[in-house]
Image (cartoon, rainbow over all chains, first blue to last red; front, side, top):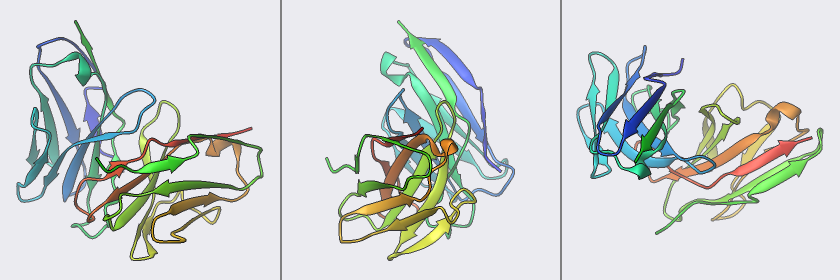
Length: 113
Length: 113
């Protein structure tokens, strides 16, 4: 059961904002956000833990709604460098799954000048 | 900045052959992972490794696969008797704990012909 991301793709102009959502049908323990550029490795952006703790990128924010089992990634004042595929990775087993992440299908973000 | 390094960057092998993918995780990290990504698809968890043993594995990680930490620095993924469908980008990752950010290597592109 993989988390479901929406939208599947977003096209922006520089300076515009975007929100990417990640929903799970199972109770989440943590949500990890990564950005992957074509042909490169995923790069860590943000981790949100059950209970509200957040760690991550200074220009990107995220929320974690435990009741809805959903996380949202907020990209504000987008830059060309934000282009890439954004994946959420979820951990379900109360922190005992030793870091196993189940990734969503990805959201392709394209920022145009 | 410390990074996860993987070798080789690209491996071509004939169907039925064995391959070993190598990784050097970040030196003070305790958790190690292998993920794979078939071209154009999402990142899929294969296995996590902690305290010199497998802590979790996915249904993809069958008897064809094995992992090893032969010394204090390397972490390897062995694929026995490769199949065409094993062609993918294989990422190694490491983290300090099971609930902190995982850092990904640049990947090994495995092509089975």
